Length: 208
Image (cartoon, rainbow, N blue to C red; front, side, top):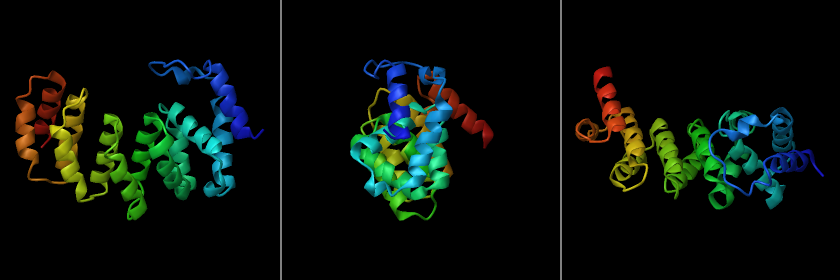
């Protein structure tokens, strides 16, 4: 059994098999994170991702998802082996949890002038999960990808349980892109009945 499999299995056993959904930052209570970090990063650096088994890819994506508070693993993978980050992002489109996909989207946003990273972000920007879409569109805006404006505009108008938070991110994207649509949407947000969106818009207005 590899260290990757051993440490992932140890976490799953600690978590009760991972069968029951948890809330909050429960993963932070795990006491063997350093060993799991070492196992994952050693595995990522040690071989060709194309030779990984589906189970091994699943172990790495699961570890990234559980590390969603510190986000240490995904940052280190991007710094140490960007090609592995792209590989894992592709795999996550089919097999990864939302808590892995949004982190991968954030890190892909640090790969400037990388056409594959941008293509992956465009795919993540249409994810079923709102937060994944939000972080992917934000990353595209940071990279100044032209499609980010239309994606943000669509996100503004998309009915969603988390629309209030999505609209805050849209305002940030359009402001960063210096979009002519920003002013109109800022005006709408200033009149919105939802307090967090309205207060966010007020802060943006005062910072100008």
